[in-house]
Length: 203
Image 1: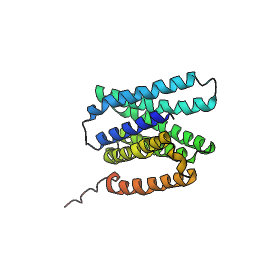
Image 2: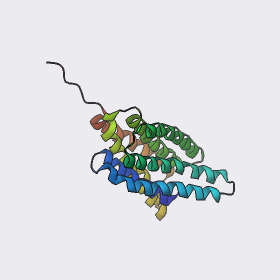
Image 3: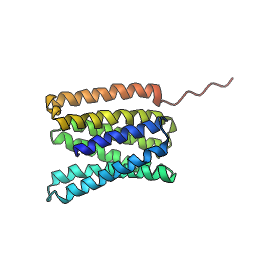
Image 4: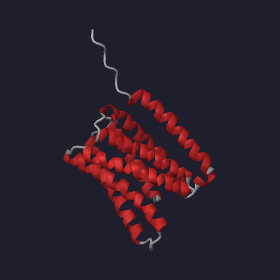
């Protein structure tokens, strides 16, 4: 994934997380979804046209479309007041593809992005459950996961890559740390935000 694009994936995940948390008006998130969505469609198109048939470069660019189409779809839904089930079903497709990209990253010797792709697979699975399966009780939890992932899988890795500081970390250790962080933090959040409220017993 392009490093600059990764930075703005972080920005839009954080922003979309805040509107799911109810911190901002939903329609106010639409413009940035358009901007980042277009960035994540134009960039891979350029990379593929200039890949000269190099399948490694093409595979790396292909994943960007999953994000670009998601954000454009979000903007369309927000501005048009559309039902979210279509976006939810597309999110299931993205979640499955993210697992495949995770396996490709692990196989290619990049355990850090192997774990990061699993982060994204989990988040897009939550989008599927929230939008397509109408699990409304997951709304705030999904927002919290998205906002956190905006930093953990987007902004922070992008800055580490841009500054070259990513080389200061052992890849396997960093991948394990990311995996442990996800299990602990998202697990704790689920038990405080994600479980449906108990139904009061009848008097």
